[in-house]
Length: 168
Image 1 (cartoon, helix red, strand yellow):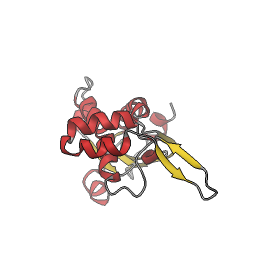
Image 2 (spheres, helix red, strand yellow; image 1 turned 90 degrees about the horizontal axis):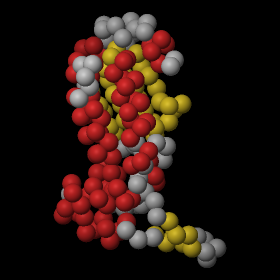
Image 3 (tube, one colour; image 1 turned 90 degrees about the vertical axis):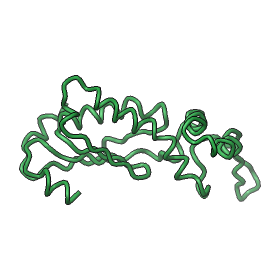
């Protein structure tokens, strides 16, 4: 982030939006995950299918069992890889969305950063706002639920446009 400020900090109307999502490891759409793993990582599809196609049994201390079928399992050695494959279609869609933008706003500057369930986009505010609206539209069907209240917009030091664009 410091390098971005050094390179682009003097530009008016520029900033970074850090997006937090709600418990996404638990919320990943398993059916979409299975489909994407089969097409993106065929050699891992058998393991993924055997692990995530069926209901998982969670044994509770008092002897009752809970049956769950959601997200990726905590403690699974491939949980991070499978989660990444589950959100890869979102990342690719947003990249293509910005490239296909007819206003050429996204072509000027496009930086997406993803780490686990956190995402970020750097650019001019009009582009950042369009990117975030598209993320909120396509994320939930795949199990990625952005939380605007927990997200942070970090404008460039000399930016005055922030409030005007993001109040909508």
